[in-house]
Image (cartoon, rainbow, N blue to C red; front, top):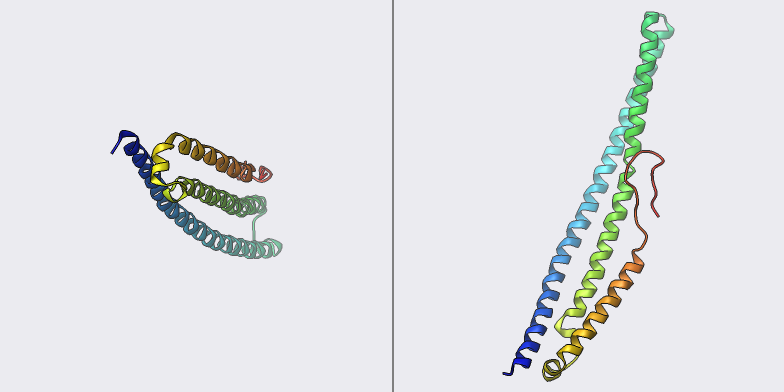
Length: 182
């Protein structure tokens, strides 16, 4: 076998191997991301229910304290302290519930990551041996042109993917009023 035929065969085998292994790993990444999104959604739903139940319990407690205050069973110096504690508890519960907004942000990021995986899988498909539409002799004789065509297809696919995913999630903090999704 001539050196040119050997190189052409090895390049074709390399591209096919990269394509096959890449697709396999991407499938695992996508599966893990989908499971992460599912678990995240369930956890956030449970946290939300728990925070709202805590908030309701705290409101009920505050109502009972108000009854005691109104009946005059609480020393006047304690009333101000109780009111301040009630405010602080309310602020913490509200902050915790507001922080749950990260589910939407992380869901968007996971979705974008899955789209990138799908795009990368398409790129890897271009490298697969089944997409080199030439006979072995053509591959061996025109390896340089085949590689240039593959590079051009890869660049086009990458640019197409980048155009679809241009919008970014810019959230850096979960503080209220700091969301900049697009």
